[in-house]
Length: 256
Image 1 (cartoon, rainbow, N blue to C red):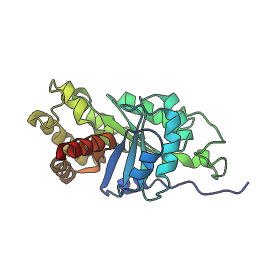
Image 2: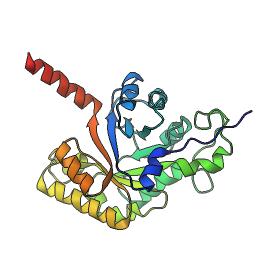
Image 3: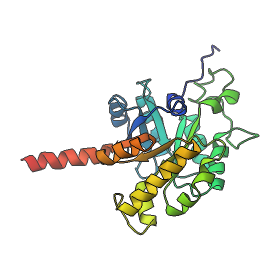
Image 4: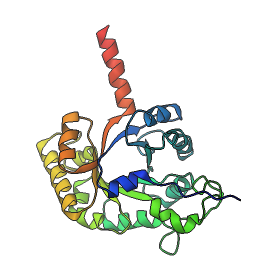
């Protein structure tokens, strides 16, 4: 059987180079919307299985659609920090994960182990998968880890207290801040622009910068996104497909 090279993870390479990357959230299932977002000029598109009705089987079609644009990276957010979900998504060819609600170094370590084959991890081995390009990637099992990227999401004030420990876990490639759940954990539900929430976010960005760990955040307000990017966010999500659609529909109706 002819062999092909392991696909390069451009998202990870750019992250390691310190390049700032703009992202957009995909919450609408199927392949049409991911295909459109993949061609919209963003650096990365996140396929959301946590807060969207997107099942693992639908991720395959989204990866194939986004993959038509080789300069754009697909990032997958599994529904949970679950090795069974990881295994299926990895075999589909997902190379970058954004893992939600990581509260401690131990939970970050569990995510790392779920992404690695034994003996350093628990990922199950399968050969005839999209990840191996159906058996054509030479020496996939020994090389795959180099192109996998793990971003952990810190979303509560408790997680912020463990930030340095989480960020220092070997195999964690970056830390993504979740403002909405952070606000709820602080008793300020949905108030992501509240001064107290903003202060915690800015402190976290500064601590991650000091630790030399790439940081990211979702900020749908353009002014806030620009400020967080200036403070060190290098993977910044600035839009959500369903939010953009709802806003456009409302604006159109209001016009008439």
